[in-house]
Amino acid sequence: MKRKKKSKKKTAHPSLLASEEVLVTSLLKDFRNTAPSKIVAGILDSRLAQILIERLPLHDEPSVPLLSAINDGFKDKQVHKAVKRALFKLKKMGVPVEDFNSEKRTTSTILKPPKEEKPVVCIGPVIDMAGARAVLIVLHRPMKGHD
Image: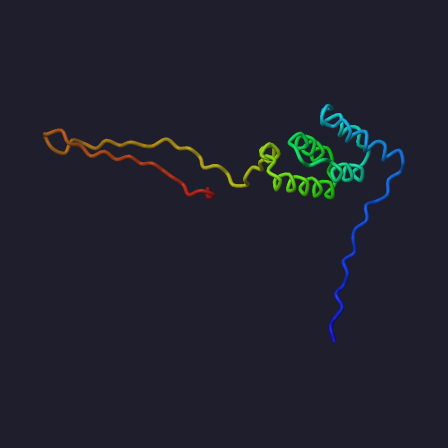
């Protein structure tokens, strides 16, 4: 006897109030002509930010700065996931998203940089009458990551 496959439950989007629906549609209507910082300031909470990202038209490049501003404006993990999903969709469609990746913060390493020491030069006494001398140059090169 065959085993029944479990049906996957679709995650339903949370229902919006009428005022929230009007806010999201008005933000989406003129997002190309408005600065991304003003749009982020108009979003009330992270749930609205997620819905705005999901409804954002993802077929052109002007949505990348808005996604970047939303990502910086909200600290919620679900918003960051929604932004990453939208960027992945844009990248699959051929829209360049390098601007978003170049703005990522670089973390500094915990390793200390090696200390720069000046080389020490020692000139020995005259060995022969032709003027040949022994020259010793000491250059200290520590291994990376060690003191």
